[in-house]
Length: 511
Image (cartoon, rainbow, N blue to C red; front, side, top):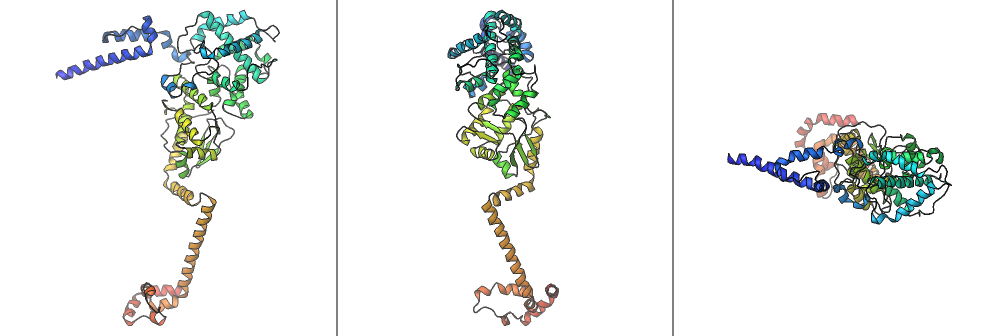
């Protein structure tokens, strides 16, 4: 009885120490400043938690925050996928020593935009005043408190925002002056840096600057969202017709930032959601079960379908930057509770299809996957690592119906046997020819047997069917071979022959 009383006390104390450890790791700044008091005894826990949970950023996180610091578990898998290489946008990486070289480039773009000779050149004070009005709302979009002063924060939004807008106009060809500051090798890296989750400005900030610096009058009748989608379209290697479709369906004011904007254009347009069953079959196993792989045209990248044993997947082009795009989309879906995890669901499905280089080869042969990574094994390793340390949500999957249909198809025994026969005997032209030749040979052998049986019906009538069968087993061991007289039925078998009269009559009817 004494032990039963001690157990709850020990668990309570242990839980308090664990919570104190978690609080010390996750909120060191609050501990140092005194916002979250150091937990020394269990009695302090309720007050400390109540005070920390009452912070404004905790209460309205789901409503306002859209730009996050990537969680540590995701960052440990691939650090460079979330850290900009040459340029910083926004406050998270502002002032980093390794990114200072591009600050001068941003100032050049800003000076070009503000130059009096520039079309519809805005006034500096107008831009600063507009950013001051949006400062509080912009700060609330970030998952961590920004340590920059009000002046530095507004200046950063003006410089970074004007650089992005001028760059987009330059790429589309609407800028009256072409910059020679961006080299060819720099543009893919800048595009990769500008799509990262931690390297974003709120879209409403960019929209305000876009309107103040000329708006559509300086663009070929394109708004900011359309300019951005045109700039980021090489990340998915889509054809220009498909990019135009994505641009036409882009809605203003829906996306939070560039990453969210680009993500919305690849999501399925119409999706019914439900709980997704587990699918544990790779591409090789699906092929052995009779599932055919085909490329799906004229659709969004995440719109897959399965019908009558045919799995259709939109083409996927994989290069050195594709992993960065997918990882940041996953990180956004993992952090933002309001977003559906469609990209994560798609990548988990793709991860299940690919277990080896052979699976990549089958998808490549079907035209689904094209890559520039060198070997199929590297592609398999990249896909398999994308969902590492990622929490999967199967309750609201847009692929639930398709996965269920695939499982039903693969669990059908008749279809599985038929697919196995097709795989073993008709997998290539030579195997098909050999199988057909064997079937024809077997047919001719049976035909010859039947003809021989029909011509010997008279002999069978004399000797009896079973007696002839018995004697035929001794033919190879007798010398000289039996003659027709030898096959005449002895007297002792005549009585047996009488019992075989129905069979003899059947043989005579065959004539």
